[in-house]
Image (cartoon, rainbow, N blue to C red; front, side, top):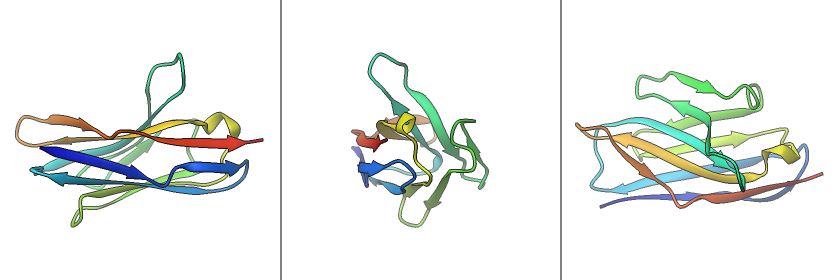
Length: 117
């Protein structure tokens, strides 16, 4: 069984910073992508930042220059450093991991990020 545990969410004023973490544990191996998504009520979940096992990353246009994704492959942890936060960044943030020989997908439980104006 695979578990993804997210942490680091909370309430912050506009312009502030937060760092999210997502730790993968259990019978997980050959991790390829480790990504962050977010979702607000009534909207589809959207990709915020993606990281590949080879080191490449990409970001949604709305967060470029403000968010940075990184990962510690030795510990199966992915981070999302969020700077210059805006009220429109308010959402539940989920980590997503694609792993294994058959590219299984696992999701975290989500962590709330609220940015006040």
